[in-house]
Image 1 (cartoon, rainbow over the protein chains, first blue to last red):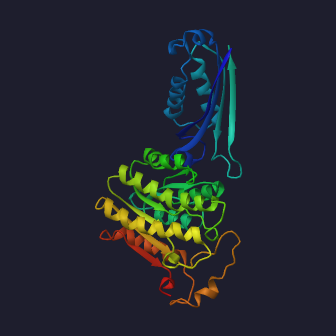
Image 2 (cartoon, rainbow over the protein chains, first blue to last red):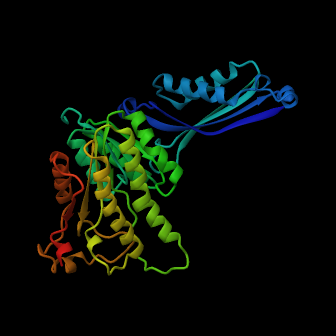
Image 3 (cartoon, helix red, strand yellow):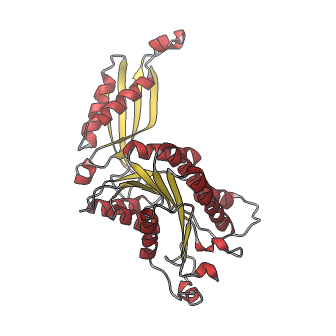
Length: 116
Length: 241
């Protein structure tokens, strides 16, 4: 099996429970690991046989930007579901970091995994 | 409640010290705030909370101004969040004593990157992407001096002064570019001795200035639309002696 990792994908969205978080966007950092069968792509060298990480990133950003989320849990769950909706994905792990969650910490993150 | 929005101000180094005061002042004046910070996250969040209390939108933008790639992205990122960006305040600065001639060029590079290259990059991007707006650069009253304990720092501020005037010529009438040279306003950083009271006795107005004096200059520069390429020495006359 092969792993694709998308590291430190940055999005700027509305997220959080505070009133100011409903009108002021914040940067989130998303890390994704995807497991899929890359044996065919490894031989053919054709994009259509591979899991296109660019389209995964576009989809993730689109989901994140679509609406306001109160909790990281809900957003992360939606991102994971979006990634797993591609039947070629055998397993995925999503970590979403919120740098503005705590002033005293670099960030707070939430992680979810799924597999078929 | 603040008045109807006048646009958005990007204030660099707005987490603390004068940058914070400028951000809060501009929020009170009706600007939305794009608050830049680098390492001072908790202070940046504190400043943002103070802006929220005024009922003004404020978003944080983390960017290491010593990193060219990050700095090049800052204005486009701000415009994506605030399409009405129309004011850039280059306030971020480092201030470390040294003399010319060190074998290690780290301080030289860091001073130039943060104090000159970053305002240069941001102003260029601002002029390219904003149709009509203003830039205010924070310089330093010591820019007229040649003897200093802060050699690399002062060189960068001298360059920023000249850039302010050249930029005003190049980008007028769409963009007005002015500067403020603060004198003894805030205590020094990095545990440097605070000798302001003693030094203030020797300047024409014989006292330390207040942040409000700088904010008055900002208000003046913003309101007077027949000014560009000017540097206000907001220093109690210190630059004259």
